[in-house]
Image (cartoon, rainbow, N blue to C red):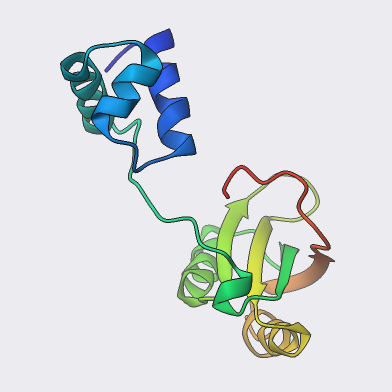
Length: 150
């Protein structure tokens, strides 16, 4: 797929709001026939524009009461150091997002755990134990007035 037009953008907006919407309802919302809508959705999927569908969960109902963003600075700036850090983070279930960023640190993590005690364990026993890590700064989420992932 080389070009995404306004109808494709409309389809993507609707699917972002409700990934379980029926093709018939989606077609009605974007003012296309069901067959044309289905062809467009399938083309967006084949092109990798739509990477998948997932359930949005309620963290509180899963026992997650502590969410934090953490910046991590590495001690050495080598490919091997980055790869080792990224592999360790990939194994840590507490880490929901990991982003390699520019600036004074190398990574921004989103961590979700049950409570402060669980966060301290993660901070000390997992993140703090990684030999690549030089600095850790934690930003505790007190509220999320806008979160388009939910």
